[in-house]
Image (cartoon, rainbow, N blue to C red):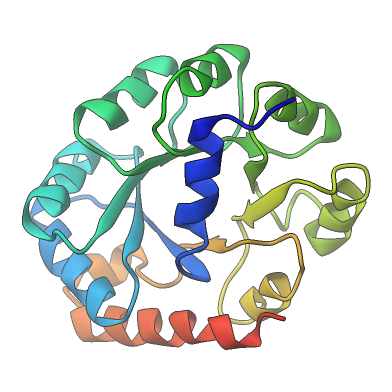
Length: 217
């Protein structure tokens, strides 16, 4: 199957940084200072998860006020969620899993999109829909690097953004894998740090995570 425009552009965006901050935000008012802290730390691509009522307003605030940021929506579960990402001007979309309806909706447009997979069957569905960049989720509970190695064998053209159970202690190990284009991580800006306005801490964590690029071979 040929690779669709959505997947090609997702590959380009995910390659911008070694770590994509995965953000769960409870107050839209925190969005702009959070994004500014991440930018200062060298991270432009930001995934705002659709897990709270504030998520859409937070993403819209960053898009409007922090032009350096590349804002995506995560936890995209339905074609309606995908439509919301397009409507607000999100730069990309990410899902924890995949469904036929969602794959069809994404394949028909040009919004960069990374569907989520755990199994070979899910990966085959994504490939058949034209997607060769996927989110491996939840990475550690789903088998860790040994599971990724097993998938990489029969699917050599696929690139992965593992997320789930990845943190400061093991991110470099994942990034050293030749099929890992980036990792997603919530450790850079956890909810408690956002709630407390610990922008300097988040900036420092972003800078440290961005430095992991040097460990990739």
